[in-house]
Figure 1 (spheres, rainbow, N blue to C red):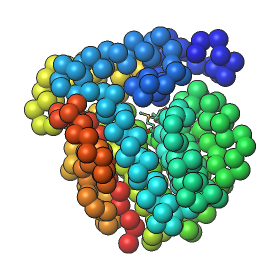
Figure 2 (figure 1 turned 90 degrees about the vertical axis):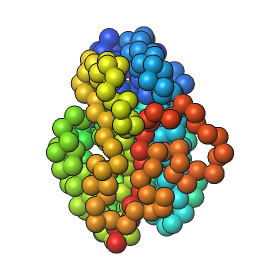
Figure 3 (figure 1 turned 120 degrees about the vertical axis):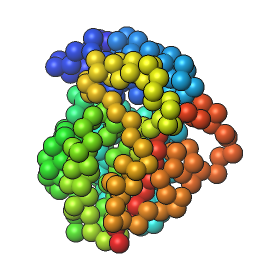
Figure 4 (figure 1 turned 45 degrees about the vertical axis):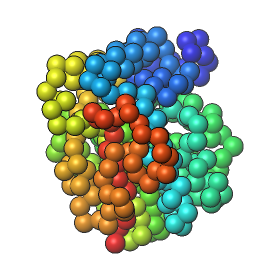
Length: 273
Ligand SMILES: C[S@@+](CC[C@H](N)C(=O)[O-])C[C@H]1O[C@@H](n2cnc3c(N)ncnc32)[C@H](O)[C@@H]1O
C-alpha cells in the first residue's frame, strides 16, 4: 500500500496498526510491511497456543455480519459501529442496507487510514458516515454520532473486537456503561471481545502477544472472559445463545472451527427492555 495517495501524511507506516494487522488476518491488502510482520508474529504465537488467528478474525466477522443482519431484520434502522476497521467484504452498512435500504449507519474509528478508506467507500452513500472519534472518550463518540442518528429511536451499538485494545478493566466497564446510556427500549448492544480458555493464559507466549500489541498503535491488549461480558450486558435481555464463542453465535455453518479450541472471540447481543 506504500505510495498510495490515500495514505494520510500523519501516519507512521513503521508502527504496526491494529486495524491494518486485522486487515492482514482477514486476507486484505491494506497493510504495510510492519503490519504484516507484527501480524505474522501474532499468528505464529497463536499457533504455539493452539489458536488460529485468521480463524479468530473470520469468526468475529461472521458474528458481526449475522448479528447486524438479524437486528436489521428485527426492524433496527440505526447502527453505531465503534472501532469499525478497514473496509472489507460485507461491511455493516452493506449488510443492513440490503435489508433496509435507508438504514442509517455511523462508523467511528481513530485510525487515519481507516477514516480515509471509509470516506472513499462511503462518498456516494448519504445514509452512512464515518467519524473520527476515540473510544476512550465515549462521550465524544456519542456526540459525533448524534448528528446523524436519532437516539430517541431504537439504535444498535456495535463494539466488535476493539475493547481488548484497552488494558484497564474499570475503564472498559465505564466506557461501555457510557455508550449504552442513550439506548432507548428496543435498542441493542452487540459486543465481541478476545478471550482465551483458562490455563492458556499462563503461557509465556501470551505475554509475547501482549508485547507485539504493546508496540502497535493500540499500545495494549487484554483478554477478558464471560464474566466481564456479562457485566457489560447487565440489566439488558441477552439474546440466545447468550455470550458464546463468536463462531457459535446463531451459526448454522457445520464447520467445526478446529483452530479455536483454545481461545478466540466471545460474543453476545442484548436488547434494552
Ligand atoms: C480488530 S479491528 C475490528 C474491526 C471491526 N469492528 C470488526 O470487528 O471486524 C479494531 C478496530 O478498532 C479501532 N480502534 C482501536 N482502538 C480504538 C480507539 N481507542 N478508538 C476508536 N477505534 C479504535 C482500530 O483502528 C481498528 O479499526
